[in-house]
Length: 81
Length: 473
Image 1: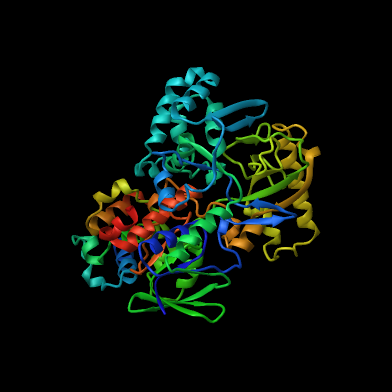
Image 2: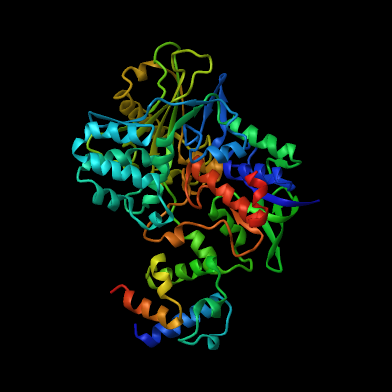
């Protein structure tokens, strides 16, 4: 899966799930602010990534993932072979 | 009539929430689908004797213990608790006999006698489980034990009693193993008389606070408007309005109630994707009077060569059995009732998935008979002569749990926790709907301790931090 494919899919998945326009999601924007995530919906987002990409994000890695770019990076580098 | 709180389900979690909230001045209504309150705490009566289903022993009731304060608030310390022996759990692996002792120092000293080369490590282990923190949700119990100890036998002994939290080698977080052990090491207790006393005591507080408990009220729908639950609908046609809803049923039931409702799909997906812990096959024995002396501890007996960390994978034969003796209410030195509990996977029960209690057919009778015989056979290793002392016996399987308690797959300890996915498998008491809350053993930790602590969290979430003082008092 290419970086562009990941970006496109993730944006659509999250926009659809958290009811925002895809156009509101930019690589440098903050995930929590853009999607209005609280602690509970943040966990749902992690579960969504887990189910769709088989990529598990441990709590200790969460602080590293602030922007959408961080999330694409994380998925890209942890995608199962 | 609009209630402050409607609680779906009357297990320990639902009743504990009801009791605390009723005492805090809220108008509470508990809805139970079956005709008996109590969930796993309920007992049944046969020929003049009460048999418990889920309650066998409780840890941490001593002053300063992990459950002391919660049980005080719930008025459950008033019940006739009986302290168990210094060595409260005995473990038999093959022909080798080990004991777990109350008090962290005695726990370490007792096991150090059997494993002198691991004494220092045992001290470190005891210290770690005594202070288990949220971070241990992300640590594998199995891996941690292997980092800590070199002796495989000791790792088997330390996992042996964790069958009571739905032990699973691959997924069990250290957090769960630590809690399963530490409250009992603090202090271990049996209730003299049936678990129904807990149900009755909590129900009394609810009624005294103006609350209601309604059996035969199965909740089949939620009325949601403007992002809040306004009312619950019951199968008997009743619609009950409430400011807040607590679901004490298995999260899978909540997922069913929320299907098609305006709730994030990812949330539903998450609570539905959890795997269930195994169920329990129980052989409840009524013994001839005056034959088997009462024993004030439990014994966990494992088949020779079996792996403690895979307790449920053996089809018809039992791999492991826990022996629990009921406190004689007539002060006799002899036991009248002994329960044999053995883990049973859902796959063993699946052929009878479509059947109901009393209509499962001869093949199921055969399964129960074979499993009972193998439980007795294992138990004989600890209590020789037990089989000959049996007057009557009754069995229940994960299918029984499923039918009486609406426990999916007859799971005895709710949803399984996984250190590899802690954020997904440990559930919050909050849901995407601001006035809908969860409680029960599937959220954080199973058993009496886990369910009680979670109930306190659920109540705090409802009353809000500012009002939390009401329950603290």
